[in-house]
Image (tube, rainbow over all chains, first blue to last red; front, side):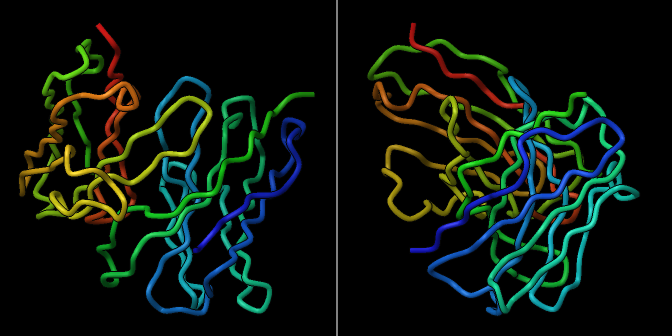
Amino acid sequence: QVQLQESGPGLVKPSQALSLTCTVSGGSLSSGSYYWNWIRQPAGKGLEWIGRVYMSGSTKYNPSLKSRVTISIDTSKNQFSLQLTSVTAADTAVYYCARNSYLGLVVSGGFDHWGQGALVTVSS
Amino acid sequence: DIQMTQSPSSLSASVGDRVTITCRASQNIDNYLNWYQQKPGKAPQLLISAASTLASGVTSRFSGSGSGTDFALTIDSLQPDDFATYYCHQSYTPPHTFGRGTRLEIK
């Protein structure tokens, strides 16, 4: 059974960088069958896709965050990571890592496995 | 970006009712439409993928339909455990986008 687990600081100061890691167990990030994603949800609000990485290291980002986001993958550790720079209070949210099926260079499947979520608060 | 318009935003229903939630995409997304259930403090759970394919372990009381731009999620014979928030999601092209959610409440 595949499991995903987010880890990282729960409090980040404004203007600094937010860094989270997702550790995957029960499955390999080297499998070509999946994309590995980051999604966030501010309290009481909806879901926002941040971006994804493929086993090759190829990435796609949400244009609304693209200038501040980097997603990377370390297949040797079975982890992928999110870095979001120059954070503000608007970046306070629960951050989820999630997996979806690779169906092609563009299309993909639903998010079938999620981490439990990591609350990140941006505050001085 | 593809906009996903989900309705209603909230819905009150009783145990045993049948309810339908709709989702409209701002452009054709074929059948790359997925539905999720989310309960407070928990990650979303995939219910339906590819518009109508039931996810593993999900009860057949949930069903999905549609293609192109118009989609629906139907829940038959509502059970107490079904009262939650539901989201649609398009995986046709990045950036992935979600509907704003439908909160299903007990009447």
